[in-house]
Length: 382
Image 1 (tube, rainbow, N blue to C red):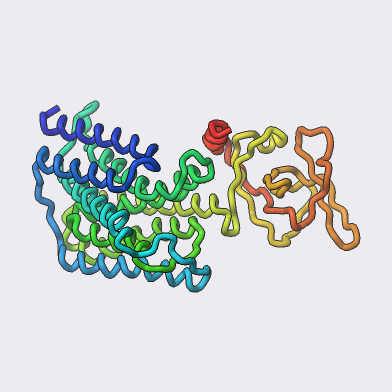
Image 2 (cartoon, rainbow, N blue to C red):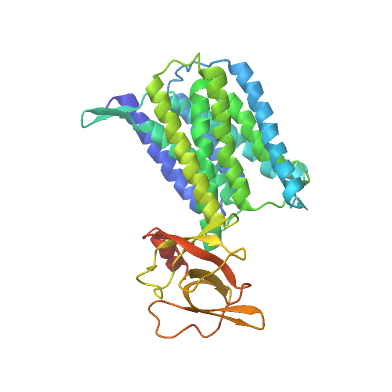
């Protein structure tokens, strides 16, 4: 491995270790301290690596477009809040203290991270393994930027609380992957300025505008996943189609990969949120073994007065817990339908009946073993 390549990989690996430490102790590390770390690493990278030139296609026009797209993103966020949700007053109001504690540190973090992205992506980090050359540096840069993005959001969550940890992993991380795919694409073709301005608009507005939509996290994550993909399509078809030189097959393959990834993450987010027609639930007990084993995931259709037959597997609420059992008997008493349930391996029926008020949904599909990591995380928090 050449000296420059070795230096690049050592730098990125050390960078990853620092970010992993910062991620899991971020509630104890101030944003000011993190901004200083990133600023120093950015300065160090400028000293260590040559700033290779990247062809910037229509960079001024694209930068103006990114400013418009940034304000459009905020406008869409507030428009949906106006239509579907209520507004809350910001917990952190704009003031001199807000500028010092939040706006300046976040600005330094955004500028430093994007300058770092630009420098690292401009390096040639290919190494030869088993007769193939691959630039693992690009993958490491992608992971680095996702970790920085997570650290920006992790202050809102307490990683020692299970629900907060799952929200971070299940919603924020999916959106971060989508955003950083686009940021890498943009940085390699147009430089870092447009992304810096776009991110400052879409992150710092929460410290300037005094009200914010009281919006479910799934929608915010869905918007952060979908919007970068729409920007990618716009830029690719407007500025890169004729100017950017590349293999048609490679571009098509990349488009298929990115599209598939975005669709998969969107579907998972919609299922995890349980805010749409279908949701998903991890089976946490052995009472339905054979049909639904512990650690399986069931995808269920949310209950909206559809007909339930004897033999259907339903999800219902019982003492603030969601239970997955089979309907074994149905009776109508005084015009109210009672559903009697039982676990497949249980000898007796459940002690109480269920009504439509208790039912969450009807199991439709099972996916083997997908929920085992979730159960493992649950066990760590017990």
